[in-house]
Length: 338
Ligand code: TYD
Image (cartoon, protein in one colour):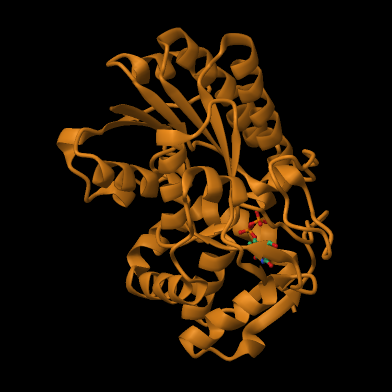
């Protein structure tokens, strides 16, 4: 199977490529990735170059996409996205052009080339915020995104649905919950808090820290994408959730405990505007139809992730270049000022 993975230098994309190559010796991968701030070729330094090719290109560019399809593609796994909510609040443009227009460029190419399967990797954020007493969202939950990032992903999901309806494109959508593990960019909550704790900085907890997320280990997430690629029903949506709802403050406290850092380092800072109170997904469809189960208990996954960041300092220090610190000052400058 010749797989085209988009965004394969990123967090979930690189884990997915490693997973796919390990599942089946007949798999080869073309990775179309623009190498934005969030991508790093070092994430895939260990894969067999005979079975893996990186094409540097942007999914918004039809010529780059055509190059990626040129050698023949059986299936597409579309991971490329601008995925950070806080950045989408500073400027929505990259989210809209990459996540929405880029997805349409790929759908058009997938249609032209007659792929056997197109997996669109989406997010729980498209369902919007859940009330504390609401059951976890099923795939039938209304789309009610509340940030530019979430709105762009919801728009992309609808475009995928339109491609299935109008051209019979054999597409499937996955919606994963908050994902964590090695190789995640240090701007995201768990890596940000781990790296800050390692450096003796304060940990900037938004608002009261009682927002709830369902944390999914990245290997469970990519195993689910692989399962959906192989056996998902065309036109279906599959929620990927770990049934692991945690308030942010509890996650922050676990990180402090794992690193022996004083929890007084956790600092309540100004909340994110429109901060979604709770995300939670019901993964019953994926479990009952396709037999997927999350395997990594949160305590183990978090401990292993903390160890990975503690022992891969050069990796995350490299991700924090001048551009990162410009973003960081914009994002945290006022919040962290005493
Ligand atoms: P994030 O990783 O940005 O994912 P999302 O907002 O898409 O769920 O953040 C996870 C949670 O952590 C979210 O509720 C916001 C919160 N958070 C903080 O409290 N402080 C931070 O510095 C960051 C980046 C996130």
